Amino acid sequence: MKLLAQDFRHGTIKIKIENLDDLWALSQLIESGDLVSGRTLRKIKSEQDLQRKSAAIRKAVTLSLKVEKVEFQKYSDTLKVLGTVEEGPEDVPKGSHHSFSLEENSVIKIAKGEWLDFQIKKLKEAASSKTSPILLLVHDREHALFALLRGQGYEVLAEMHGNVQKKGSPEQVKSTFYSDIIKVMKAYAEKYSVSAIIAASPAFWKEELIKEISDEKLSSTIVQATVSHVGKQAFDELMNRNELREALRGGKGNLRVSAGKSCCRSRGSGYFAHYRQAHPAAKAGRHFSGGRACDENSWEGQGRNRNSQF
Image (tube, rainbow, N blue to C red):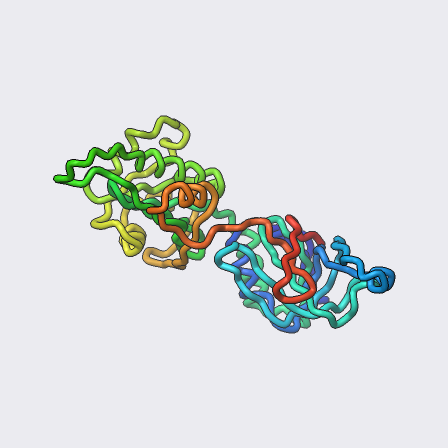
């Protein structure tokens, strides 16, 4: 989070959201009654449009909302701030409902009647934090799960199942499961700009996977670890492995997460969404739809604006 301006005497700050941890921090800081201001899209109908029964025009406007509700949208990586319009252009009625959907790169202003000491401390911690996420992978020859480790813990990104040769089966199967894992791994590493990848498996499966990686840049970020089984519970086991602690402590990453701490939720995104369509056996959470930056006049509007700006 970048703190662009602050005036705690008058209760106002201006910030730029830089990552998902910032959204989580803001979900704890923004309260009912606060005033949140930002640039957003709003469907607006003029009197002439009403007379002609014309479609509303979507315009970019700067609004200030009196907050009624804050919702962290875990499946789309947005923070929804819902409230009523306090300030805005003349063609936006005061008191009408609107909502911001805040995301990475959104710029907003927050005004409170009073900033409490613990809120100021949390805000400054978020502004000074420079964390780099770590990608977690647990797998064997036919089952893989990905998770992302951040300051708030880990979240499960996707689960994959491969079509492999079964022992004793006469049917010959040529598996591409390892190459599929590598494609998803690379897509997530680029999407989240990870500082390290922890590849963990029972037995020797991780070594077999790494042999298939031709991208030297990708392989240089991988740290191997061992887990006793493959499943979502394996991430809790991995959180206590020395390999992960070394990656957190050393040059691979600068994240600081207590061992065993988790913030577990499932979702699928990016390349994996395409993998799921091409491979019905693949399992994932809800497809990530980045880019939702604002909603329309009602709570469930479908406005779109990549960057909310104040």
